[in-house]
Image 1 (cartoon, rainbow, N blue to C red):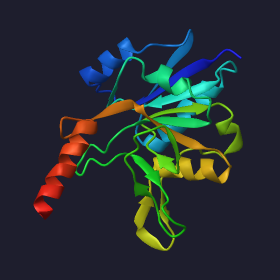
Image 2 (image 1 turned 45 degrees about the vertical axis):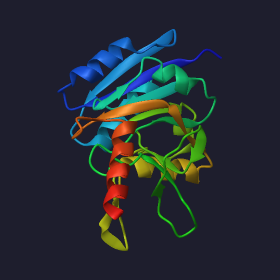
Image 3 (image 1 turned 120 degrees about the horizontal axis):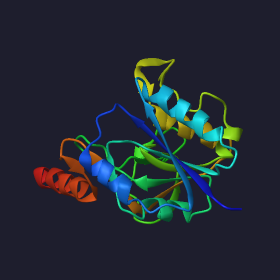
Image 4 (image 1 turned 45 degrees about the horizontal axis):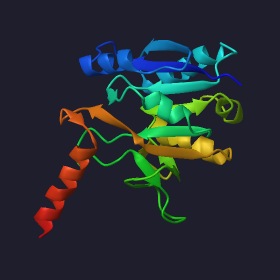
Amino acid sequence: MEKTVAICIPTIGNLHWRFAADLMALQLPSNTRVIWQVRTMIDTARNLLVKKALEDVTVTHILMIDDDMTFESDFLLKLIAHDVDIVGGLAFKRTPDYHPCVYKKINSTDDHTPIFPEVFQEVDAIGTGGILIKREVFEKIRYPFFETWYAEDNPDKHFSVDFDFCLKAKAAGLKIFVDPEASMGHIGEAPIVIKQTFLNRMQEIKAKKV
């Protein structure tokens, strides 16, 4: 079956030049369309983008990518080469400690622990700022696909749209993967947080403990 990708971009309307340059250089499958959504709330924007994308019955994959990310020209081709339900690139928090936006449950009582993946692997949750999702995923999880919510037993603890989506996907029996070869930069305080930013931060923390 021929693959058709809808690139879905939530934006506040102020594009960083690096994002714009990387988007223009992105290598695309033959059938690709780009959908923009000027947003107020990120969960609303993501849901509207998916709704628009699924209106095209030929769309087989949705690439959700945020306008504060940077990426290599082969980013999409690397992700779509994996025939899996959900796969994301390796991104990092844009504020200290810059940890990877990739998580695994270490045990049954653990929430989600950030991990630094060095190989393609299955994970329990991943940031949705650069993630490729098969169309069938949205047929297996309930709407709204993306929500922000608070834990009933702890009003100070909230679940972001990233965790919400991943929890729904896992509950539906779907698998989530990360490809560290599809690495991204996160436009923030560094000013662009990449893998080396995280590694440098870990070295600083280690040095302070000595």
